[in-house]
Image (cartoon, helix red, strand yellow):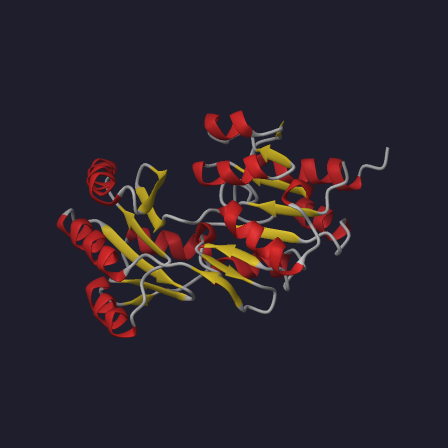
Length: 272
């Protein structure tokens, strides 16, 4: 089958061991026809994704940010925005504060966190974005007056405390929120009715004569499962979770060994 679009997760999939795009990957993507769009789908905020599109020389591609909670077209216009209701954000923050966990609140291009701790500095290094240093409870009061919530709440800290928060939220709000432990020290919280797959479908429906079955997608984590299941060709990197590998049509090399580049070259550039 001839595939007409590419969609990839970022962390643990597209980036190498230095958390950057390899020169080989950039070269291969630049050799693929610009008529084949390259969509990034991530839990990241838009600002933490745009510099990667610049590096790939695809600056006008749409973005699937916050795991599908915020979809932007190539000009930065919102195609969809779904947030966690502010009263639920407040409940999460209070529970996290009681456990002395790091809390970050994210909405659109805003990232708010109270202090320059270890987790904030690590996220700055990984995403190339600087947050505003504001207490989440202050942000919540401001957001209440504006009547909007968060695209994502991120809690980080001791694995046992993160596990305790996860179990508490699962019991209280598990039917209303996505709760995703991307690492044992991370808990990412998102609106329930979204996924990377719903985000991709929104983009395709809005401006492309491309079906989901004409897309090649890459991933490694739980939040990539729906995406790999619903596209025409799902590819899991070698470091992917077993559950991701189980739904993929192809297993490529580890993200540290340029697995996405290897598969892209074979699928889109191999003329034999």
